[in-house]
View 1 (tube, rainbow, N blue to C red):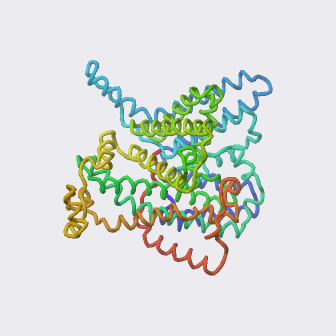
View 2 (cartoon, rainbow, N blue to C red):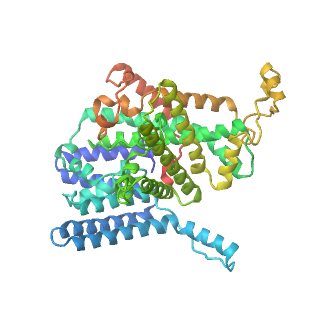
View 3 (cartoon, rainbow, N blue to C red):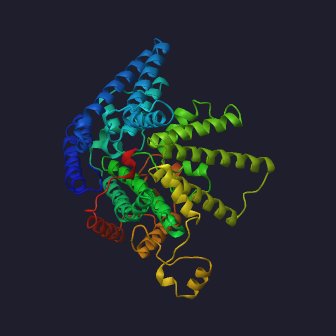
Length: 522
């Protein structure tokens, strides 16, 4: 089941809310149990076969956490042994489902090209939905338990913590200590009309990002990448159309999902952490990773980068730790060399960024004015766009071919209507062609130009949804992370109601064009 579907919006969600608050009038425990069961049903709707895997993972990790927590006082060595064993089991499970096919494909390649030539065959392994998220969520729980941060071992609350449907499929990655106090509150199963109004508003705005913007941009990004995969050679403008379309598609898809998750959770009086904070406005890659997939960045920092030594053992070791963290972060996103390269590229970006900051500090160079900040923002954005090409491409050949087109190596083509203009004459003398800008997909270029312009204006000039709702603390730590805008602050009014109603109308008439979220595959 996906958020942008009729069955979710008009059947699942209303029923879950109605029964939750009806039971909450009599029993907080029953209301929590109902929400847990509904979350399991939500997961099983996609493929009931993997529901057993999810429940088994929950039982094993809850048991491991319970043993760790109750062994700390008697034997820290025993607690550490349980922790290490459970981490290995979790990573082994994740590795089997996510990387076994990747490992065998590479083993067969090496065998065919450098060894005996014999092939190793295993049945195709299907990736369970959300396995990366519920595995990382539980790994954080185990480590937090070992560090003495976990104080509650209510099994129903723990199961809800892992399966809570607003976050289950594509994050955010949650901390046990963030959620358990909220689940335990008796008031959470009492209707709060303010939270319902705010939650529905955030959900609708996030859904609009997904349905009206992300999916429309995907209609151009996908054919261009698929055209390159089929052997096409994109020219300059078409290549940039493809790269920018995907860059904006992923932005609106993921930020839209994050907003929807926060809005849905608020319907149950539970606040999720912010996972997305206008990352394309960042002036450096360091700032980008503080704003993009914030909870994953936090997880990688707390449970990988810092245990590796962080920045405590000199600059060279710090750079090595950064690269290891980003390479593994890239591999977490997908089993493919394109993801590894994407992670390594961002690791290199971060190393250069930190080295540059150290040099500026040592030389006591000023930060510069508006022009300097514009240049830093543009450079950061272009670096991110290049990275997304590897992230989206099915293989290295597709990525390198599209990047080649983006440099103009395959030539440059313009609309045929430009040929007979004054500009066309100048361009023709420079060797330009006039066979159209979307030659591989045969799609009209006027719509993609409008979409890109609208998308870029929204991204770079407007506050994000959480900033618009900043007066209402709709997410955890919103006061610390968000800069409150001077314009477009949401207030309950007739005008706001009319705007949200109009947005809802346009979303609903386009909801039949259902597509999954891009992060489902990770």
